[in-house]
Length: 397
Image (cartoon, rainbow, N blue to C red; front, side):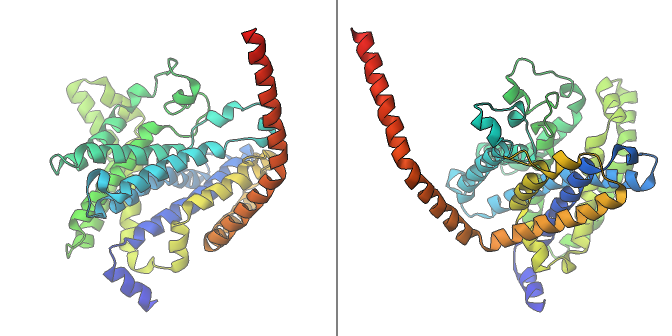
């Protein structure tokens, strides 16, 4: 433990951010499990326990998006090279495209593909799609502004967050009928998308903005002495007073937009939750250095993939969700959620530890499978060439 503490003091890595990411992914696991399997009879908003669970579950996505933007940008600006020469740009582009690919891959149904059909659910947008696009968006902003004035990058990040949050009442009612469903799903939940790039990109850009502040003041002696109470203060204001603030602006200016925010002020309230979570994790940062906790925080992608396969039956269509959908009692669902969290995190940690060996096994199996399929592929190609020659010959004559 002493070695870990010493490492934390001498390292530029912010371990409390990894701990926040671990907390967010664990919250996601139990949230998806309970929401998917709890019987509708027990979904009573007047019940204090259910209401508290529902509110805290709502923190998960804002925290996850904010932390994702924070971590990526923190690593991005640490590089001594700027612009396209920054190696983090290439890694970020690859990572963003990888998340988009995995997001679509997890929504494939092998039985449907064998029947020559791709179901509409394949085109629905989820958290991986949005985080992947958010990373690509942050890279685009970075490349467009890094060679300009130093303040432009953080200003644009903060500005995008405010614009997306303030104008949400306007664009959330748009139908996007002029776009194909595959693209419209990135902007509207009408077809069943779980997340949309707007307004969720706003949390990623805000996390990116926060990381620039931490980078600028990371060597400041009283960084946490100032940051913790400031985060608590801003968080409390956004949670309890931001709605009234927008009502006052609306009453003063007569602008209906601010009144619309007052009636559905979930974005700024959830941003307040993010500030409170940041403050709590910064406050407890000296104790959040368990190697297991940090590994969980660094394995969120594999945890997400494993949970998607087990719970929703990705690829096969055979998941817990299909068999126990809205059928469990509170005691059953809580006990099941704990087991589910343990299985998913343990499986992920085992995978991460043996990743190289598992990839080698998969590669060998693929090569062996390809070896047996090669004669069939050659026969198919030969037949296709013969048919093509016959066709071209017929056309020529």
